[in-house]
Length: 144
Image (tube, rainbow, N blue to C red; front, side, top):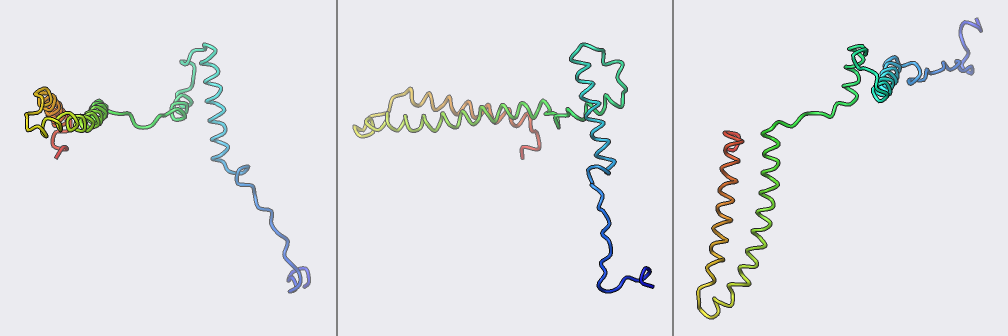
């Protein structure tokens, strides 16, 4: 009975826990995939034809170097419009400070500020109107 039923003082032997890295089939597959991809890259770099590559291996290579979602042309245009808009707002803010400094002496003497200041203000208004039209054209109903 001693061999069948352990006594209270006897500790059952520990079972060895398998190493998850060594026994995991998916990690082995990943290593094979990466190794295969590296061989493909070496073949490509040495000038070998990619036509001889198995389509499954070629798909794995594509997944390895997938850069994520591709930006549509509308999104790209909107990104550039955002850059230009930021630049216009920053330059307009600087211009407002300059305009204040330039027109303050005229106001103290109760004269009209220089006319070129008003022309520059109209140019900024035109630029912001063009920006608004471009955004409406690109975003359509999503603008609202």
